Image (cartoon, rainbow, N blue to C red; front, side, top):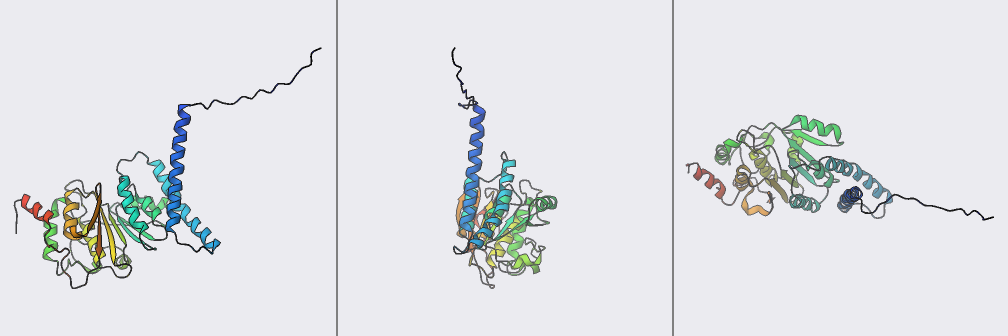
Length: 308
């Protein structure tokens, strides 16, 4: 009689080069790589005591929420088109990395990169200004410790030349480059923000709002002028302020940057992002730039058939 032998048969699913499997693995790899990069970047920028395990643990816990918020945001908006290029984002991130903590970061505009800026500025203060009160409310409801304020702009893109001429006429009075805008009546300055924002020594200012792609929109002339005054009137903190202007190729952004931030302070451009570094000025200074009338403004006036 033949003996019966037990046989073990192992069955497993095929994993050989299935297209869907490779696709999912690629996305997982990209997600984990981004998370690792962001986490390491945050750790590098976070100051902690090597001798204190408790302090290190607390710092790590503080990092988790902003980073997770940013990851969720970018996962949900992976196909967004109105975003900065990688080179532009890296330019701002590099300035944040070089900032002596805590870093004060003022951002004009709520954009695709909003949560990135908040997440990268760990331990510092990031404040957003935007014309859309509803959008601010949505961020405040979904993101903890989110600080933003609405701004009512009174300018229009079509008024560019008239507004700049008004500043030039009042540069020794209401539109001085060094002043507290809270008490100013300069029509280009933003003077209705919460009082405490005017006394903060801003280390970085990013102008990526308000809207400015049609003549009836407010444009960024007030934001650029206000950034220039805040940087030159800085009290406390470091001597310099990094000011970034996005969509620098547009007329309003280019002309106002030339007039108030000045080409002599331009340190780099990345795609459509211009990076200026401004130093504090003394109260008795009345010129924004070494050359009072910028080439861009003269060219704009010449094309309109007007000149001084």
